[in-house]
Image (cartoon, rainbow over all chains, first blue to last red; front, top):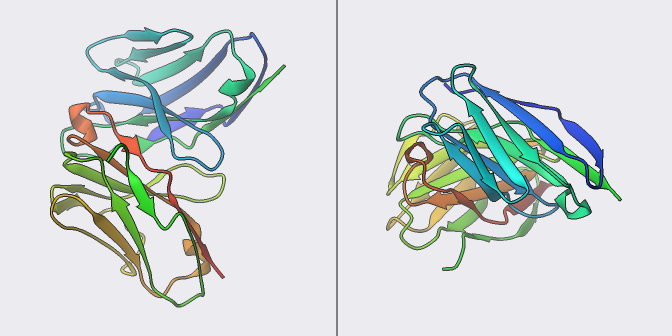
Length: 112
Length: 116
C-alpha cells in the first residue's frame, strides 16, 4: 500500500520568510496529492492540491510542486504570516477506490 | 448540510464501555472516510465507504472497532470495550467520489474521545 513520508516535523520561520515542506510517496500509481492545514482543535482544511498531470500549481502565497519521477511533492508558502502557524499534512491517493494516506504532519510556527 | 457534521464533539467514557460516533457527510457525497488522530500525531486511516459498502477496512485496529453506513448518508463508528489507548480524535470526511478520483475530501471537526 501507499506510504507517505513528510519532513520536517517542525519548522520555525520569521514572519515574511518562506517555508517549504517536503513529502515523498511510495506508490507510483498515486495521482492526487492534497495539502491540509489543521489548526488547534479543528479538523483539517484543504489548502491546495495537485494532480499527476501537472508539475506545479500556485494559489496566491501557496504553491505545490510535484516530481512524479522522484515521487516527491512539496508545499511552498511565501511571505509567511503568524496566521500561517498550524500543522500541515500532505497526502497521496492512488487508484480509484483508495483512501488518502497522510504524512505525519509538520508543525509550522511563524514568529513576528 | 453545509459541511461534514460529527457528534458528539466530545465524549468521556469509562474503560470497558462501548461508544458510538456519528458522521453526517456532505449531501450527495458517496465516499465517506474515518480517520483516527492521537494527540500530536498524524491521521491514521481506519475505513472508507463507497455508498453503503466498505471496500477497505484495513485500517481498523482490532475487532473492537466497526463501522456501518446506511442510506448512503450517515455513518456510525462503534468502539466496543473501550481501552485507554482508544483515546483520540476520530475524524470523518466525505467526498463526491473516492480520493483516487481526485475529488476534494472535506473533514468534519472530529469527535474527541477520552477513555478514563
